[in-house]
Length: 316
Image (cartoon, rainbow, N blue to C red):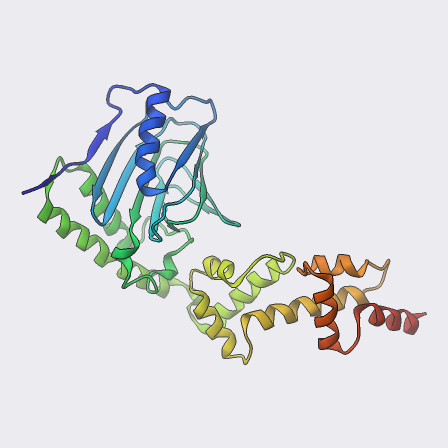
C-alpha cells in the first residue's frame, strides 16, 4: 500500500538562494511560476510543509517576519487556490481588484490567472490548490466564495482548515486514508458556500442587482471593464448577471451603454467651461469617438455637438 508523507523543509536553516529555490518549486504546484520580493532582500531561514495528493496540494510556508510580495503567474489548470496569512493581514491584487484579508481569514482565488499577494508582516502563509477536475460538479455552487474574505471563525471554514492541517502535520497516511480525508475536504466546500450565501444580505435578487449596479457605476470610466470583471467582484457567474438584467427587460451591455450615454449627456449640459466632446466620451468609458457619436445620436436623436450648441443657445 502506498504511503503519502508531507515534505518538511528548512530544518537546517537554508540560505537565501536555497530558500528561494524551495519556495519556488512548491509554489509552482499551487500558484504557478512565482517570485518573492523581500523588504530586506533576504529570504534565508524559510521552513515549511508541503503535501500533495492527486486531487489536492497543500503548503504552509514560514517566511521571515518582514514585508514581502509574492507575484505568481497562475497555473494552467482552471481550478481554485485558497490562501491565508496567519501572522498579519494579506493583500491580494488580482486583475484589477484589490482585496484586503485580515489575519487568519481566507480567500478563494481563480488558479489560472496572475495574482500578487502581499504579506506586510511576513510570517506564516498557508495555501492550497484544488484542480478543476475535482471541482467540476460544484464550480457554480462555489461562486459565492470567490474573491471575498471569509472569516476564520466561520464553522465550515474551520472544519475545512482543520482537515488541511491534519494532512500536513501527520507523519504519513495510507493512500486509502488520504483519499478519505480529501473526500471529506471536498464535501465541506458546498457546505461552506451555502453558509456564506445565507450569511450574505445581497442574496436577494434586488440587493444583488443593486450591488452589481453600484459596481458598474464605479467602473463606467474604465472602457475595458467587462461583465467578467463584475462577476468576479460579486462572486457569481456572468450568466447569473445576465439573468438579473433580463428580468428588467435589458442586458448587461445595454444597461452599461445607457448609463454611459446618460452620464455623457449630463456632462454636455453641465454649466461652466465646456469640456471637449472627445474628453467627455473618454471620461465615460468610450474608446472610440465615432462609436460614441453614433450611439449618442441613436439614443437622443441629436449629435453631442448639436446638443451642446442648442443648450448654449437656450442659455445665451
